[in-house]
Amino acid sequence: MSDITLLDGGMGQELIARSGDEPTPLWATRVMLDHPGLVRDIHADYFAAGATIATTNTYAIHHDRLARFGLDPMFHALHLRALAEAHEARAAYPNTRIAGSLGPLQASYRPDLTEPVADAAPKYAEIARILAPHVDLILIETAASLEAAEGALVGAQAAGKPVWLSVSVDDRDGTLLRSGEPVADLARLLRHPVAALLANCSVPEAMADALAALRPLGRPFGAYANGFTHISGNFLKDAPTVKELTHRHDLTPEKYADFAMAWVAQGATIVGGCCEVGPAHIRHLRERLVAEGHQIV
Image (cartoon, rainbow, N blue to C red):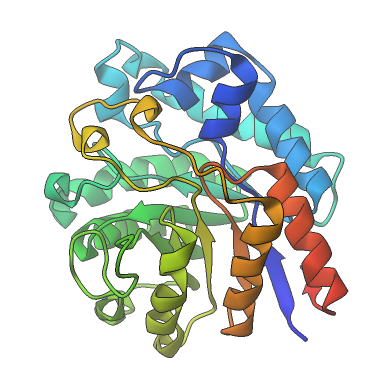
């Protein structure tokens, strides 16, 4: 049996469900101002469910996103607020870790908006330096192209912490990034320090092929899928809200655990959930892992 790192689940969708607010393009960031403590409570629920890593609510805190809404002066303060809420939740759960999230610049799932490495890396480095004293590792999330991944990787080194790279793959063909580039071509980025390789925020059905492409690259690997039916065309327009995405009604905790256990059977040692995968899913997944003799670390 294996040692398995159990990530948490999605944050943004939980925030919408619990806050009752209408989603905006800045929903997961704005909620920290409007509902202090809600992010902490969600982190705590994931820890209680058995997750051993809390992923900070910093995914969308970028200058380009904040500036559209007049919040850019709060860039540093919002990062510190997100970090504080993760630490407040972690206090009751020793032997857990905090992953500092680095999300895509400009927008998710939009390889067409990828910034050149020379432009993107300093922006990521600024965030990495803020996160560094407060996190155990840096988690680059939802990279949609090789260039987007490299810009984040170069910038993330400024933290001086282990860096995990997670990419978003095509929902119909998990061997491809959302850019259409082969997942296997991530090999060319391994000249940069990468402690683990993952796939995230794609449908669970795509993850087996993604993991088959990641496994030969020689790093610990894993997956955390979303619970959307697909990424709609309207969500790929400028400043979308999550109202453009449809959640699946069939992805029960039991069904999600079936997918994740199959990933573990492929050799994955890092599993968890992304958007629309909540504490109930993580709790059931933990129970399945333990029942099959795996050690949660």
